[in-house]
Amino acid sequence: MAAVTVTHVPGTTYQTRIDTGDLAIIGDEPVEAGGDGLGPNPYELLLASLGHCTVLTILLYARRKNWSVAGVSVQLKHERLVVEEELDGELIRRKVERIVQEIALQGELDDEQRARLLEIAGKCPVHRTITGDLEIIEVDATSPALSIGA
Image (tube, rainbow, N blue to C red; front, side, top):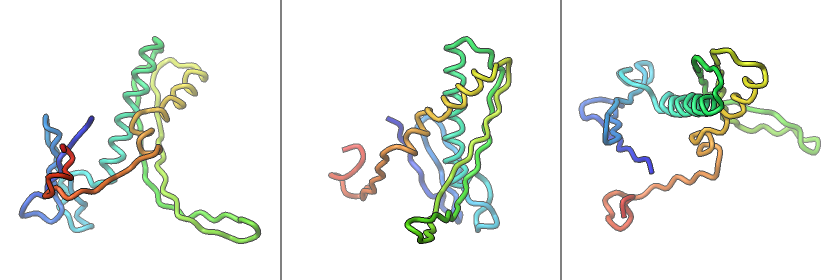
């Protein structure tokens, strides 16, 4: 089980301390959004989490297969779109959130290996969590019976 604690940094507008138990990083909002721009924003952290997991999943799979992967890099973008579809002659608009991963594989790989590694990228644990049956439950930490550790 993974766990982090995120706490507002007093005296700042949006900075948070993100503590994993072993290390801490600062989250923030960009200056143009009212923050100090001293750390990644929540969507950048989400993309970083997915990208990190994708790189590791590809590397682990390639190493297990003894494929020559010299490096992997993933550029991620989060988009909010309005998609129009026609259903029974009626135009329907719906909002879609999309993450695009542009995956660069370095090394001597044939087309079949590259295709397999791109397929494996979609099987990383964070990808499965985000796209799977995810529940997010908010509980009042001041109520001992409902705390996460209980």
